[in-house]
Image (cartoon, rainbow, N blue to C red; front, side, top):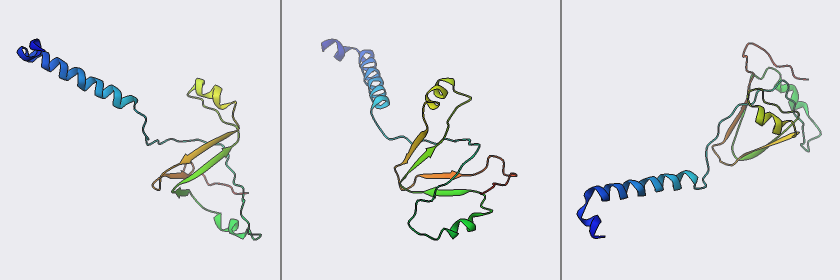
Length: 124
């Protein structure tokens, strides 16, 4: 301790070590992180699970350019998944037939839109 009182340089080194330890702890401490990602799909379909016997609302969605949603919800995507840019991810994706996406915040958002805005979607 006597050495630290006499050497200002030792205090600076000690302070630097404490700051670095703080940065490392902050980096590994569990926390929520915002995530933004894109899925490019060849085909997408929707299943109506409502209780209403009248499904005429589907006629009103012709010509929609994009779908937007927000708020807390869970999206479950079903199909075949692959990644051409990440081979290690592709190996895991080919073993799955569903992806579960949880949007945990009121400010969470999702959007479905064509990658080429000149193409029109076909609704069957």
